Image 1 (tube, rainbow, N blue to C red):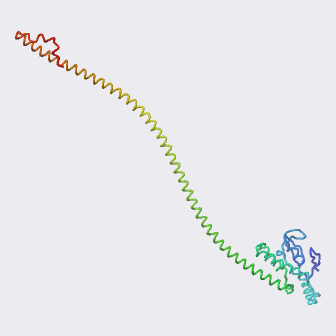
Image 2 (cartoon, rainbow, N blue to C red):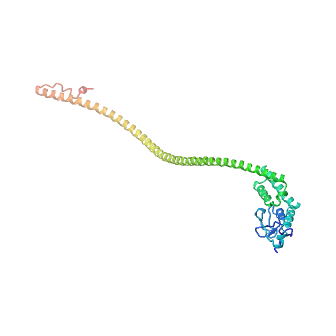
Length: 292
């Protein structure tokens, strides 16, 4: 005959028990599994591997033989009595009260909603059809009411999430537009920077050209001053030459007058020689011939 023993309380489990198996293969009774694996950070009491109540597997054993089949009604009566024992029912109700408390705290924002729902799931997994009639009905209604509140809260969160999703989409669209505008401004800034650099280069070239022109102007100004001085000297020389020319012109005029006077005297001499007269002889050496 198959014998199952709880790894915590070491009680032998028979057809009247509800054995629970972990993922690592170790067996626990329902009371010990409910109490041990409903705590925070539960683990297997044998191999110390992480284990939660909702991942445990409930075992349904069928070990009846001919003799036990004859006493089926008596065993069913004993199972009902064992399943409704105060210890088992109270431990399940305690799990339900903890689940209700965690749900209330989660709705108030002081507990994580996922942990609260996990606690409710643990409570639901603990309740078997044989134990359900012995559970406090007010507790079950309270859990149902709290779950309805959770459902309403989840709907509100879903609507809020939908609105936030739309806002995020709008924000992403605005971000995309802002990014495009920023890129356009960045390109404009680059073009402006290129234009500024080109303008600065042009100004530098113009400055160099201005310096060259200024140097040429200085040289031309110096040349002009030298030319002005030379022109002044030339004008002075021209004035002197003009005065000298006037003097030579006067002397030429005097010589011309003296020439014509001598020519007249010679003509008179010729006539006098022909006529035997000596008129005008005494005037040959006189200065009266000069016409001033």
